[in-house]
Length: 316
Image (cartoon, rainbow, N blue to C red; front, side, top):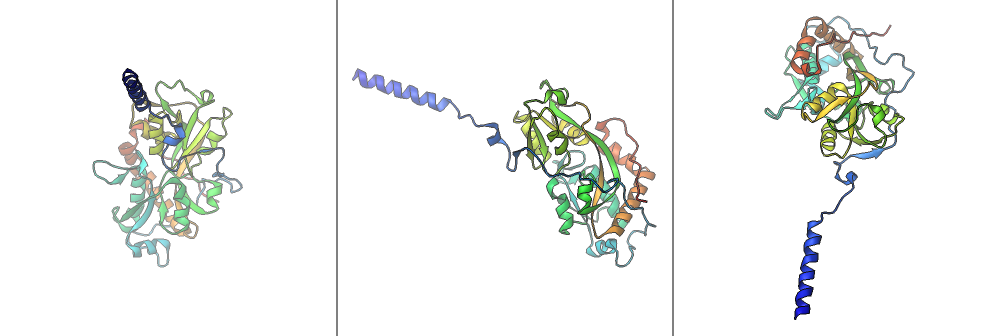
């Protein structure tokens, strides 16, 4: 009987030990759906198109509600709303306000100014959330009229869509935990860095001589969560997006040297050059009448002193 009791105690002890030891999963298994380690990415920049930032000169702007017959703008008026591809996960530029449930941000405000000049009403707009990898295809498929989603003009993208002039300019850096010990790209050897599928900011990360492990995700909120949970050591993209993430967690900081300089422009379908000229006319107004400055102060003052809006570059 003593032997049986001893066996029972031993069995109970073994059971307790097994129950108190959680199974350790590799970090990759904890990452959100769609995340993957990548060794390369499609070339989003390309070459051979001259200056990818240069766009068509605006024509004389029609008055709101009186778009030229047969134009892309007239079709938008006929449809009743401007359909816009936007982000809902980029704080300050395109995000869903938890208090109201509405998508707002600097990109959204730019889109509303375009709707204002088409209809005379900035509310005649339909916001369609898409992820970064869908920005070009959404225009090609006719799912949206324009994309205003921190979209940078490149030669590769110009093979498929058109772009307005630039409405914002920024450089690419790193977002890390305050105690990470990472201060620049020189500290990234052996580290895991998060980027987002379909963005040109993956290229500079993959080109780093330190050869960090690059984890591509579907959106920046997934990167933020992975960074907070120490599944990655850093995230890298344009400063406004990084500061938008940092605003949501004071335990993070933006560090490092500039890895690239990019601009944001409105994406437009290839068969709508009249809409390109029209949008460029809207952006001329926004730069010149104080609207751009007002939108910056309202949405982006966390980035520091207001810069001048990017000067437009035109073809020819």
